[in-house]
Image 1: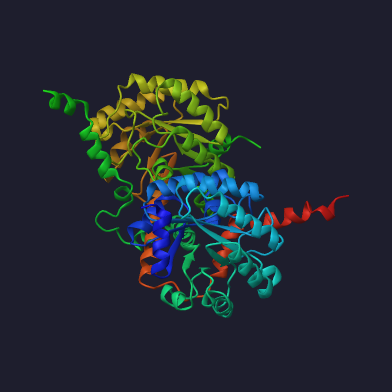
Image 2: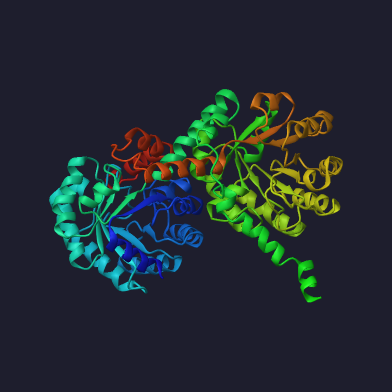
Length: 293
Length: 285
């Protein structure tokens, strides 16, 4: 089954919880810990390349990262496609490149290019009509009708709820599979999001951890992503390791905090080192001679 | 500004250089933010983040690409894993030029058969010593910046034993390698042999591991130490966060604004806001 089809199946069954990662190793960790879907964060992908999330990372770099992540995993991948990296024409190419990389769904937002992280200051949005056309272009560009197109609006911070809701409804109207109001900071905002959209039949994505998945489902959400999960864990652990290294000349305590990974769950295990040893034996030149004999 | 290699040499003149393992721009920025003098780009971690085991599957282009992001993200010198040089002496020469262009301060080339495997894996094999000697000479000749440090690594301890490893390390040093690096040091006994038979004989050496705390390794006379949690620690931390999430922990809390601000500062967001003001259209003369 295609991963896009699988994602649609999951959406029919209840809320889809997709932890955010930004490289193939962490994506594998998501799959190995039993989640149904992976979210690939643009913030994290930018950070991985050493940049803040302000539209400096190119579509090529995003696609490159997605290719590695999709190759390394089998579950549906939902990807950040920022503004689509330009106008409607760029959006068409972005959808096709993302599909070829192997994603199941992607979100495109209505910020001006270059964009900013949904939680940063200084966001600005393009006119509603312009983004509605970008969503239509994205839907038309799909080579796989099951690819899930998610329309994101960043209008809440700069323009307030009225505009954000109008935009979300308009994007759904033109055919977006889901809408995604980003920049939800408080329970009050989350309740408004739920009441005005999610519980009124508009399929919605929630980015954040204000409530657990079961509660998000009760609030009517179809997808919950925790975009910052991997980045936050890396920041905390790598900072702690550096501080320990500076103070005591080792990283033992920081490493010990996480305990040894279980059987078959080390980095080398999940990257397939045991399989490589098997393949080496199977294709060993001397083994071939013995078979020929 | 002096070249990355020159800055690394300057740092080494003041004592052992500690280079923590990093595998991307973000972890390099974290290390630099905590005062690291240099960072080490791990090949194992570079392969891991694109989903590959460290058995020679990641290409030179992928390694150099990652190096470019890391060296571009930080101001401190980057010591980079260059595996076998990705082929013969000719390939090694191209690798040196690509790594130099990507911003490396130092790089290590090893004597394993291609495709290689992680220094701590089973089943390593080394090519005859004359080949890596020539490869080191080729690498040295390919430098345009004489300060770029060429580090000769030998993987011979596990397959061939210490006598061969010592012979190789000495030969690579004689060929002109700036440092030698005996990899796969698993015990304190190994580290003692490494110290007495090479470091104390005046051969500049790199130590990869965490058998002893940093000051004790420095006291033994090593020039460079590469260590730290690297991608294995990140993986463990991410895995823990995922397991917590499955249990329902870590949600239902408000966003950690302090952490968000610390991360964005590290990534240079305040500078971006300043630049936006400086180059705003209404600031044009």
